[in-house]
Structure formats: structure tokens, C-alpha cells
Image (cartoon, rainbow over all chains, first blue to last red; front, side, top):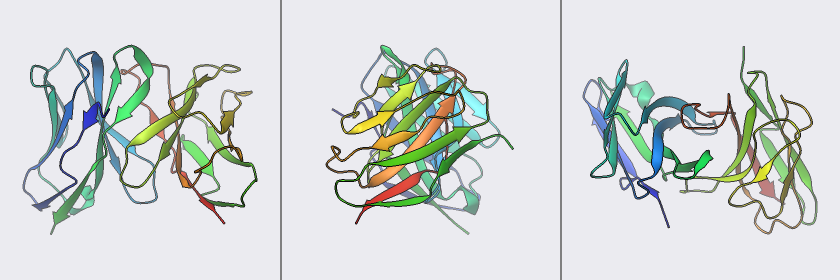
Length: 113
Length: 114
């Protein structure tokens, strides 16, 4: 049972435009959501997180939006840069477990110059 | 610089052998974790440790063992009982447990069976 889903395996955008990565979840008890970025042969790098009591968190070019009623979150990258090309993982924690990150399968973002 | 160091980057194992993956952190984090990633999949938790001399099983602990004798070190042993050990292994650490303490990852070890 996949509790965190990233339904788009890949996304391609033009440099300078907005990238929107989406994530859906099923466990309403999750209390934090995180986004990680991963380059090939490297570990994931933490980008940004949001508490379930918030609906938006912003850090530079990265903004995460949370819609609890829809059990949906999204990561916006504005403006997109070629160096943003990587796999992005959505993860959630909580729901009775304060230690385990539950990850989606990832979305490959390609930013074209 | 502070960070998490995993070694080796690539590891090959013969059938029936145990192998140990190293994970060291100098972030002064209390909590440490081991995850496994398979192609096209998200990460799955193998073991985690909240403090020294304590560790707990994650979702896929069968065929693996760990120790936490020092705060900065959390080695993972892949035993011969693990039937499908070929994967990318990631170690992580955090200040403590909970979503407000993001987990930070090393660069991983890729294990392959000869």
C-alpha cells in the first residue's frame, strides 16, 4: 500500500519557467512533509519541509504548498535552472511513527537551457 | 566540513558472504538510519537508532544487522540471509526523531552480488 504517491515519473520544463512537482498521500495522520532532491549516485539532499498545520512554506526559489483536504502537496521551483535537473522525492513522517520517512517513487525533473 | 560519510561507494559480495557497510557522521546527531533503494522505488527503512546502544527494526530488517557503539558510527551488515541484497544503501542522520528534524543523507553504497 503506497501511502505517498508521485504520479508523474518525469517532468520537462524550460529554463526560467516554473516547475511544479506534485505529491499525493493517503495517511491523514502524517504531520510533516519533506522534499528531497537527488542526483545520480548521490544521496538525497533535503530541500524544504512543511508542517501539516501550515499550507505554505517558502525558501528562496522553492515553495511547498499543502492542501490537507485534498491530501495533496506540491513543490514549486521558480525560476527553474538547469542545475535543478534531478530526481525529486516527496516524503512524509508521522501518523504514529516519528522516525520513518515514507517516500514516494520520485519525479525526474529535466530543465532545458 | 560536517557531513555523513559512507564507504565504500561500490561493494561486491559473493554468495554466502556477509558484508559490512560503513556510516560515519560528524554532525553530532543522535539519530541514525539505514535505508535501501531499489530501481524505480522510494527508499525503505531497514534499521534506525535513536541513541547510542539502542536500535530498532524498520520495515525490511530481515537479513540485516546493525550496531551503535558510538554516536558517530552506525555500520550495517548485510548477511547471507538477505536473499536479494543488490541495491543502493543510504545512511541518514538527524538531530532527533520527528518531522521537524529533517534527516540528512550520505552519498550511499551500491552493493552488487558477484
